[in-house]
Amino acid sequence: MSAEASTGILVVQPVNWSRIRSWLAAAYGVVLGIFILNVGLPTERLALFCWVLIGLSIGCVGRGWRAVAGLLLDWLPFVGILVLYDLTRGLADSLGMTVHVNDLAALESAMFGGTLPTVWLQDQLGPSGGWVAGEGAAWWHVLVTAVYVSHFFVTPIIAAVLWLRDRRRWIGFTARFIGVALLGVATYVLVPAAPPWYAANRGVIPEVDRLSGLGWEVIGLDRAGALLDQGQAKVNLVAAIPSLHTAYAVLVLLFFWPVLARTLRVILACYPLLMGLILVYSGEHYVVDVLLGWACAAIVAIGVTMAERAWRSRRDRALPPKPREPREPREVEPTLAGAV
Image (cartoon, rainbow, N blue to C red; front, side, top):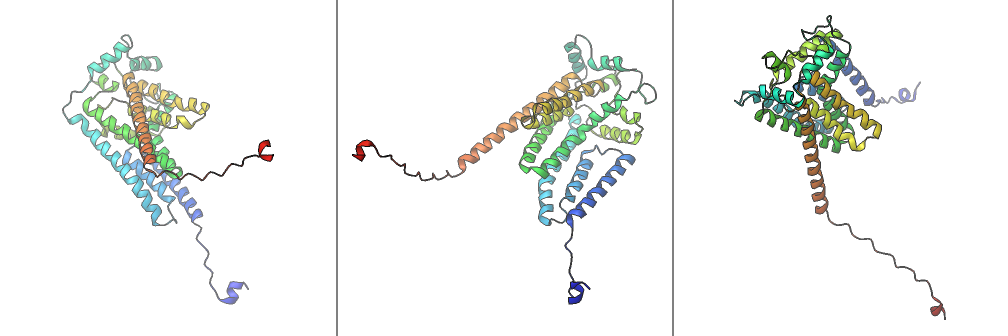
């Protein structure tokens, strides 16, 4: 008979919250996987951040209400600003500003000696008379779609990991993220611009197909492609300047550049370069849009970095000076004269 039974005392075992969180995380992964296979990737921003917050909330289980309150206080303002950005972006093309279609195509053509890179790439890499999975779509269209869709996931995942590991770095990253979004909305309002596929549909440039979602058809995930198409249809169709796909890829590169080894810097630098190439090839952006995306990320990164340095300098000046430690008297060695 055990000691507990002999004494009649009921011993309550402590709850293993770590194991519970592990099981919840596994269940979360299964549910998310089923959702992606049956509905598609959640590329709509509010739905995507809901999934992120649900995943982060698992880490709060068993850690009290303060952990949940900290999660909500940190993330809800951030998500709210991004939802407002999406709403504003969708209204930007209805404010009566002139949409740049012909002049943007003419500028791109002049930059490349009368050749449009999007048209040239699609002519070189496949048929221009309509792509379908069974007629010409190659395996590397999966890479095209994967890189394009990564735009919707890379920055939220990085933000979630930084929040878990280093809140100070998370604040810096989200400040840059929001800065790029605000600068992008301002540009969309002032300079609404049409992408290549839009211009081609209106006969301004030669035929161009929109290929960013073709990879889903290659691997048989038509529902995921349909969800991407639905998301693309809801946003501003004349928000080509700047390319925020490029801007966020460059932002990730600039943010992690100071802390990476040389080899990792080279690898990470391939991401915005590949993103730019795919955006031009798939008909989503002109080269000039991609270059302005680089400029947008650089402006925001420099601005936020300067603001952070100014804030740290002001904070350091406001701190009381540290008291000086008393200096110990220095021993004087006896000299020959003193000895005499």
